[in-house]
Image (tube, rainbow, N blue to C red):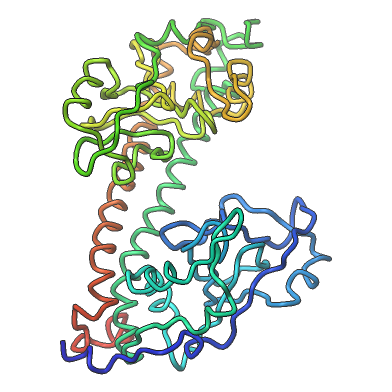
Length: 426
């Protein structure tokens, strides 16, 4: 590794122009205004998620940015409670740091912002953080007083940029796919609401409205119970086998996302335990609708479009459509805000609310005629199918990026002979 000889081990303070933490208090919320960044806005994989944000009033902005106003290229990170989350502030961002967040302002003459951001996900940096964590009465934290002395290994600046450009190419593809997913999902959702909530489906002008248990609905649309559209309504295993080093995945709510199960985060169980749970119907089948049953119930609802060698715990419920209601129709229906509101009557528990399946079988469902369902499916199923394909593509891109990252950040892969990123971009 010729290039490794040129790397330098320096305190991280030599790479930045300033280190700042956020306020040690919380401002009153506002409906609109600058963003008040919280730990939840930083993802585990290094991105800023502004899908759900807390705002502060415009007149409070100066007060809450007295220490620092985040700028494009700053690296914001968590230093208390939930550690090891890092994100780069994007162009156009206007907001302030929240509690338990800090940022550094990289010195562009010394370090490439994106290289340093990726470095924070290296084994070297994680080991440094782990050896310096302070454990308090309730949470762990990184001491900002000693943080400036944490060591980092830096290649020459041109090499930093080459490394960052390789890894950024994967993140840009992931981001592009994510935007496409959001657009396609929004299109399918809006068409669904137009047809099945506002009842402006093709030919609606010739259909009269009648009263039902769910209010006025088009004639020939039925109000039925959940058990009328499913052959099976059940949940996963109420028995939790012990974890093993290698085995079959067992999923719980924490492993769910909007489009499926993250098999990489599932714990593993022994083969014989897995086979027993398969016999007990704890393995989802193709076209089952899975819902988050415990905790943030209905937070995730999706159709199984690929069968995996995986079983589920009881925090996930299985709805097995019987053909009267198409799987994507049922999943879309359960995502409606009105449905989630009505679901409160079928939930028990205070600390951990959960859907009571015995009662949920009686939950009212609006069943459109088959021809209307199939017309919507012909229009929207391809959009939803493309979304899932893009989600899988992103998973593959992340896997490849995560395999490359430690080899590049450690200098194991020599990039010194590659063209400068500016030349590549041109």
